[in-house]
Image (cartoon, rainbow, N blue to C red; front, side):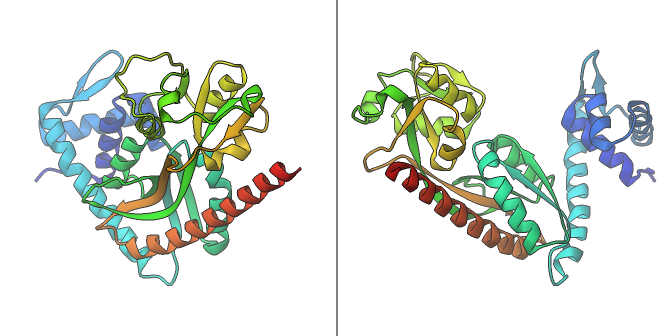
Length: 311
């Protein structure tokens, strides 16, 4: 009988995911030599190599790829046993792993984390901010319990629940404040600043302008909404940002905010989790807390914007 330990499987999964001994060791909070020794013992136990070692990275062998699929299923099942026990309690306690897309995290998290902690004082909340494809994969594979993303995801294995919808607004240089608001056709002729490829918000902005990612255009890409707004303030073009980001991002930039005529570009933000998660009922309760936080935050932002317009 092959003698495998649960610890070895955890280390194997971390190395398979990171493709690098140093990063995998950091993720597991152990030393690199200790990780290397455990992986070597695991390979000796199964009787064949699981990884091809390179000077700067490692990759799975063909057998390692097949092995990894089974290991992830095992680890997810073990995690779900713990989730099953947690779900049986009167309230959610322990670790809650939440993923959030970058165009939501800075604006929503402070309020949401405070409200979740107040409603569930025994929660140990861990947050990961990354792009939508990685969040979907991490939720599906059990590395995250839930994620806040733009909907729809349309992944059969995941449950989606909407939290709120918000409009996109146009950010342009301050001196353009009194000019007519351009429509989608006019935007295509302007220097439109967008987030880097991989951000779903970039794709949504392109869709509104009826532009394809491959279309030639005069453009500068930014890594964050903050960068885009500052570039607009420097006179480098115009950009679109979600309504929730306006109060934070326009405070220190000489820009003006313009709202489009109907039909306005918009997005729906929601939460996702695995349909098979034992925490599904608890996560639905969590989503209600998050939804109420979002509504309160949106009301505060609308009131602040009204005060600015009437000042």
